[in-house]
Amino acid sequence: MLFPVGKPNDGFAQYFIGQSYLAPLSTEQVGIFNVTFEPGCRNNWHIHHASSGGGQILVCVGGRGYYQEWGKEAQELHPGDVVNIPAGVKHWHGAAPDSWFSHLAVEVPGRDSSNEWLEAVDDTAYGHLK
Image: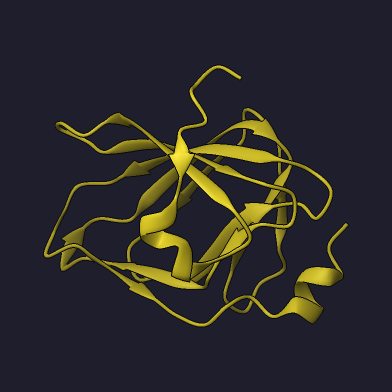
């Protein structure tokens, strides 16, 4: 692993199914965090809001995971993949059912930025992912 796994992500545990870990890499200028998911762990649907700018970039660094936008098919993620998530897009991301997964979460600077946490990812839909 290139980056530290970090500590259990207890501060956001209510927004995850399964155990995740968080390692802050940069908290100045731009927030960059290594998020590691145990197999089967994923975050709830959520939206990064901003009146201008904002959003998130995921840089996949280990294992195998998924990213899905509302109304679209889930896309499989591998080390080296990059996902640009504009503000206002409902989505989730996390590990594959049988693999650990880590990504760098880059907070894109924006005006009036906030996160809205929504419902959990449906177990049945997630269970169809390989």
